[in-house]
Image (cartoon, rainbow, N blue to C red; front, side, top):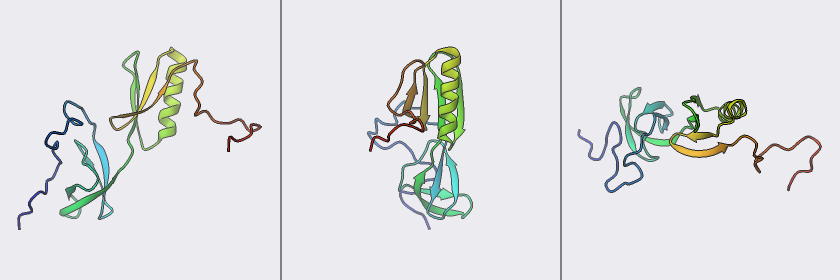
Amino acid sequence: MRRTGSRIAPRARAGGADRAGSHDPARTALLNCRHLQEFRPPPHIGDEVYCQRCKDYRHVVTLLSDYRARCRGCNYSRKFGRTMFMADRAARNHGDKTGHTVDRYDGSKLEWTYTPGETSHGEQLALDDIPPF
């Protein structure tokens, strides 16, 4: 039985400028069979892909976060998997030691930038601070 429209790894959509020329790292996808599988390039939610464990086609339920810290001033770059707080901590440590600006990415999407010496609005409250709500 041949499935039409199914594919093992998704291809760029016709006229899809969002993927043209972009370099997406491998992303881990949760399939509707509850198996995790890594894809390069990453599929979109709802795409039908081949599950290596089930040996059948399944739908992508969600893409798991894949955090990476990358420095703008040097070649520092580290992967942190699903631990956002470790990526943030490494970005702050590297930025404070070198004075460089460090970005945190989720896959290929820039989510946060740390610039040494700047205070951001997303900082943690001290224990004696009054909450803003």
